[in-house]
Amino acid sequence: MTHADPGAQGALAQRWLVCAAQQRQTVEYRLTCLAFEAIAAGRSLPLAEAQVALGMTREDVRELIERMAGQGRLTLDERREAIVAAGGLSLIPSRHRLLLNGRQLYTWCALDAVGIPAGLRADARVESRCAACGAPIWLEIEAGELRSASHPDLSLSLVAPDLSRSLRDGVCAEIGFYCCRAGDEADARGLLSLAAAVQLGRELCLSGPPI
Ligand SMILES: [Zn+2]
Image (cartoon, rainbow, N blue to C red; front, side, top):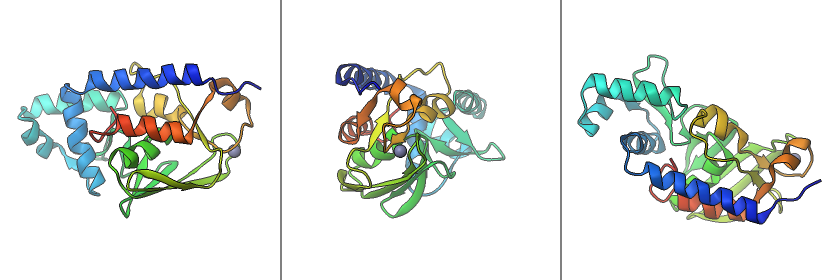
C-alpha cells in the first residue's frame, strides 16, 4: 500500500491553480460564471440570456455553448436551450449532493463539493459515497469553514486538470471522496486530506466556478 505523497499532491494542486488562472480572462469562463450564478440561485441559464449578457450574436453564443458542452464544461437541458450545469455546479442529480445555503444542488466532483461552499463562504452540507467502499459520507461547512465530517480521515483523490479530456465525465469523474484506504484505485492515486482539499477548493472557487 502506498500513502499519499504530500509533495506530489502539492504539485498537482499547484497545476489546478495555474490552470484556473489561465481560464480567468476567457469568454468560456465568463459564460461559466453567468451559468454558475444562475444555478447557485436554483435556476438554469437560457441561451438568450447568455447571448445578451455576453454581447454576442445568437450564432456565436450557440457555437460557444455547443463546443463547451462537447468538452464537458457545461450541460444543456433536453431542448439545448438552457445551461443546467457549469463550473462543476449542477441542477441535475449526481453522486455528490450539495445543500448550498439551504438549496439542494449537485456537483461534478468531490473537490467542487467542498471548494464551492468554501470559496463562496457559504453554509453547506455535502452528502456522497466513498469511491472505494461505497459507504455514505457527509460533511458540513459553515461560512466556508469545515465544521464536521462523517469520517475523521476523509480524503479526496486529485487528478491532473487535463482539459483535453471531458471536464465533467473524465477529470471530475475521477475526483472522489475516500473514507478508507481500501481498493487498488485509491492506492494508485494518492489522496489529498479533506483539510487540504478545502484549502485548495477555496482558492479555486474565490470567483465562483473553479474553471
Ligand atoms: Zn470507504
